[in-house]
Image (cartoon, rainbow, N blue to C red; front, side, top):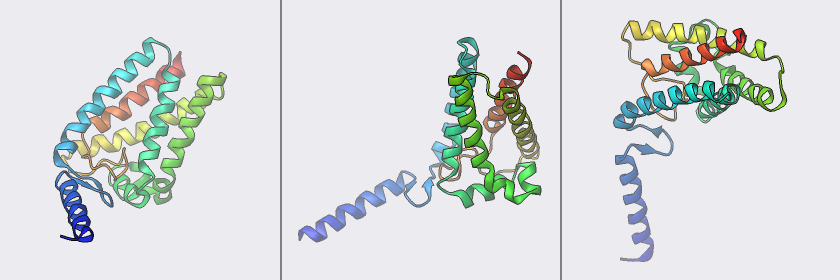
Length: 186
């Protein structure tokens, strides 16, 4: 076999092998097993992160990390995110531009939480209030979909990583709302 044919064969085999594992570079991670297991891993990380951040006094930093990381996951497939997000977010359903700017809102919140952590009080109550409103309304939308037992892709990590809308999505919103309340009333 010539080197060119051998390279093509190896390339094809690697592509087929990665696709059988649920990885498609153009469509993201699609494994059903991953989609079922990852939300529980994420829930554990969120719960532990929230508890430790409250105990060891780095909650503002944790909230900044949360918003920046989650916003960056949404950006690779912006249009896909918008479609998935509009399925369950109450504001995004009513105001389509909101779905388009939501990743930028999260990124901005994250950066401002970082500023607060490293440079003191910079409108922290305003940030906490915005967090409370946005994630509170988002949580209500998620709760409605879960109560109706409707099956949708969660847009919290964008659409590149395929995870279903589950109680973990609601947990994300509830934990962020709880931390915002702690910031507002402490």
